[in-house]
Image (cartoon, rainbow, N blue to C red; front, side, top):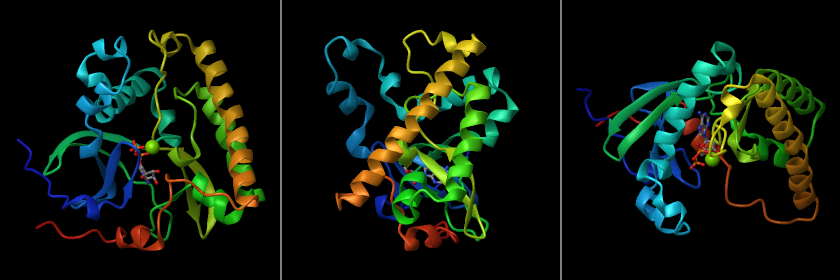
Length: 239
Ligand SMILES: Nc1ncnc2c1ncn2[C@@H]1O[C@H](COP(=O)(O)OP(=O)(O)O)[C@@H](O)[C@H]1O
Ligand SMILES: [Mg+2]
């Protein structure tokens, strides 16, 4: 059996999403480990749903388990090329904060953890470099028929080299959400659905830039401080 990984407590996470806390793997700084937020347990999430949805098994409300299954489907139905666009997934590990999902941690060439597309656009605007990345991403995402829910700007990270955006990687929100996700087996349908998702990104970008232009709030998700980005460049030692 694998030894339990000690991640510390929630204040040691480099980032927090709506459902999970993200830590740098103390034994491998090229990997991150995501654990479920204690205040967003599968039991709690299920209780919040309608009576009909509450009939679903508890595993359906566990984001880590769902994501692991999605990665397996991606490997089977899209294959190796998918990992140009999503992190590699290394499976579940046992941690002091419960089961953790281990995956590739996306970093820039200077070792800093890559920021989200949302943060990049807020800080830099829609630069020619990010537009070029978006175009390449849209083409590849569509031709591979990558499965996802709506692509949210805080679930996409921008990997930079020498400060310049090189590629976009989707780190969350993967998998078809249909009750019977036939698009895994019908490539033409997958391509059509994926193309629609990338078209919708432009709407999300316009909304974000409107917020910025009108001095509205950035929102809760998808901001990494410089400290979190670089602190994690050398993760705390295992104790
Ligand atoms: N593989 C990764 N590489 C770099 N940053 C990541 C990675 N996974 C998550 N993050 C950062 O952590 C945040 C939250 O992660 P996410 O998986 O979206 O959690 P949740 O499922 O709670 O929404 C992301 O917005 C992103 O900034
Ligand atoms: Mg997320």
